[in-house]
Length: 115
Image 1 (cartoon, rainbow, N blue to C red):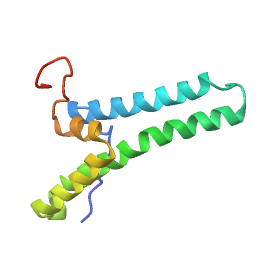
Image 2 (image 1 turned 180 degrees about the vertical axis):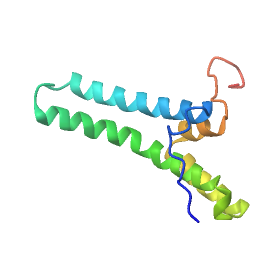
Image 3 (image 1 turned 120 degrees about the horizontal axis):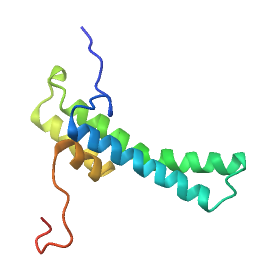
Image 4 (image 1 turned 45 degrees about the horizontal axis):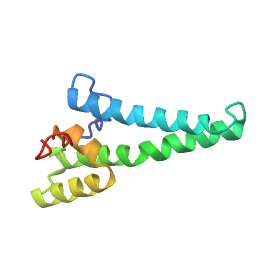
């Protein structure tokens, strides 16, 4: 029996999922706006370039989120080593998204030990 895979942003009640989704969406918007700022936003080429930048900015985080969700899916029967392997790959793609999804705090550069 198959069940729908949870997608980032689907579980708005999960604050960690929502945090990751909102952060990725904001990064994409920022990349889009920056690209338009430096080009003539009225041309199709400028909008296409801006969209390319937005997708390129968000894609690693979306893949990282998918890998974290796969690693956490008990229906797959993954070993601990396999789950850690998928999470490590996800971390290499987008550390911020993985930290958002897992609830790990980001370092605070204003504090001596970063926390």
